[in-house]
Length: 461
Image (tube, rainbow, N blue to C red; front, side):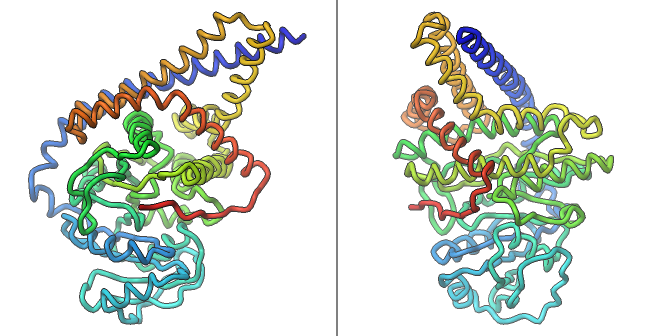
């Protein structure tokens, strides 16, 4: 009986591992072909001034809660992006610090008697301000409702057909908006697009702009550089090529406003609003038999601060896992729904099996195989083989992502930095990924038992 249990655990872990890595291999192949095609098309986009006359105007939305230290620099940087027509809408979401005061003082805000069309339901709006010195800047002051609620409030007063959501602590390259809007120009079916998020820790920044990208000096953010490369250049790029992308980063995404309004805007009852809005968009548009595209742009368009402490990393990954659980189960009708196409038949099951249930399967597999080996129910050679192949394959995926980045975008040009990333791509599989499994298990348990949602401010330098 006990032997049968350990045999079952061995086969379950093996099948899970084979299925996961076959999926990763497929995404890897798709990503390589997609990047190759994108790099050929990119040359036309890089010609200065080309396409300015057809660039759709954009409303840039910055949700801000207790961002007094970042908000001025964030707004000033956005004012200088290379884009023909845009407006900036900052939403002060019930801040308890001086966020509104510093905005009012720096940009000479005055109350603006603008009609507030409540197309999307939000927490009460206290006032709307407009800058005297910068005509394209508006500020909404409202009661606290969360990031999704803040975006909805800004959508209600936005003027333009596209809305771009940007985090207050993110740094955009000057051509970022131009690049991420390209899918809307080249394909009228596009309803949302997003770009790569990169780690900014350790880089040179001035006036809100990245001057010189460098790899971080601290080990945790250094590991996350490789982790982000793998997640974006393989995961999101591969799914995007199948029109089955299930998440656009909350740090930088662009949406067709009317489509966003038609599905009810961002939900406020989830901690993973950036994933939930995309999954719901797939669900509603697929079931309505609409022809649409949700696209990933592989350029490094957004730079963000990664956690530098274990506590900060834990809070982030627990929140991500809980948000993933909420997003999937709020849209469970997609699962194996023939009307949902490849999203329902492939992408959603992948997320459910390998991302939602993954931490449970990995914990069960490692514990069962470890105990089976200890008590002599599993052959030592099988034990060593399973663990070794799992680790080695993880290393190969990380190294392939690093190679794809180097031959395509060549962001890190110093040999010493590339050597660091090479070593990290190997070492992250020896402890860091297993630690993330623990954090994901905590996030899963908090979702399962309905623990109170709490936002923990990220650690920043």
